[in-house]
Length: 261
Image (tube, rainbow, N blue to C red; front, side):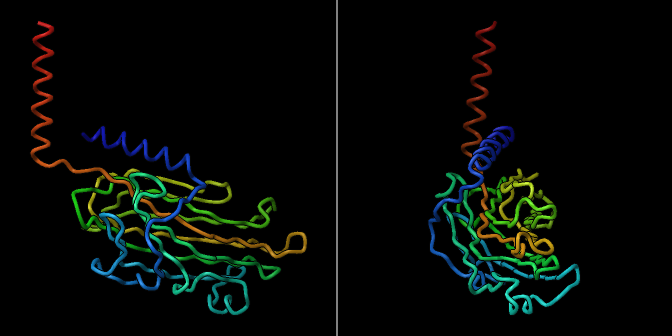
């Protein structure tokens, strides 16, 4: 059974990587990130058999490596996309990739060099996901991102990195991590969880760096326009199903022994 689950997860993993740059249409209406911050499981985003809740979004900014107020960068036009009231979270109930459930994060997150210095924003983005109906377990996690960097061919180009760690929400045990980064343009990643679970806590780090200075008279910049977070799953067999599978395997074994006798 375990080998079958791993095989199913790897097939889904390959399918996601093959479609890495395509984030399909979403099946549920969008809500703002602000409406999901700090929510409990009864007030989260319901997608299929799962609920996404307890979101957190904390940006930290710097100019030339020195910490600064993110609001000051917004005021000076060097940073956009950190207003949680404008960031859209849209549920996906298998429309993008059959068998995968999750949400799409749509934003205009962007950092722009001040003409001399590297401007950075580092965002801690956290959420919980839990199976709330049925008998499914979360077996693996997939991350896809879409970004723009200008220029991409400079000696010190802008960069976009998204990394995340996945934990068992019940006991805090580490289950896996994954990362996408540009450059190099690796915009999708997947991880098979060390143990299938019914609820996870995801701690995500989103880092954008504009790069220092100008390029051909234009200030360097990095932006992230969207990010998809998808979870795959495997059904937990009911006791009757397990018993039937056992009897079937036993019958086949007996038949095989008699045939070879």
